[in-house]
Length: 156
Picture 1 (cartoon, one colour):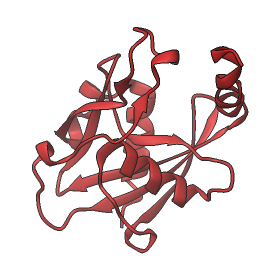
Picture 2: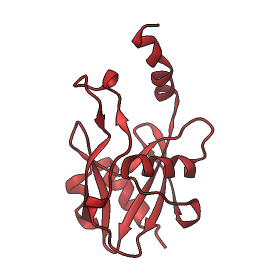
Picture 3: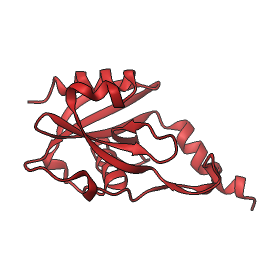
Picture 4: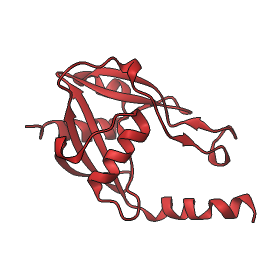
């Protein structure tokens, strides 16, 4: 089997899934974001919902893969669904009860070498940072910032 053929199911999945889920992690007036491994932009912890997963299961899996933070569904608040990149993004929220230094977080998932722009595998997230919520637009793209601000307004 050719390498390209072995990746076909992966690319078919990415093309067919139109649902994403993510978790906003906050502590007081700050939000934790991760820096993407190759492109260097900052992002929230989100990704595609796998076949057979509920949105909350997908959100928790993505959070664990991208940050190493493992939570249970009962601690999350649902903030709604939003249109993002022609997909539906389900967002959840978790407020830390105490500050955790961003150096503690670590990405467990790798972008495969075969689909990497560099031809080498690299972590999805390479750096983590606490950002004051009013400054999110400095780090996140404008569309995502607007979605995050709309979602934050729903935090109880």
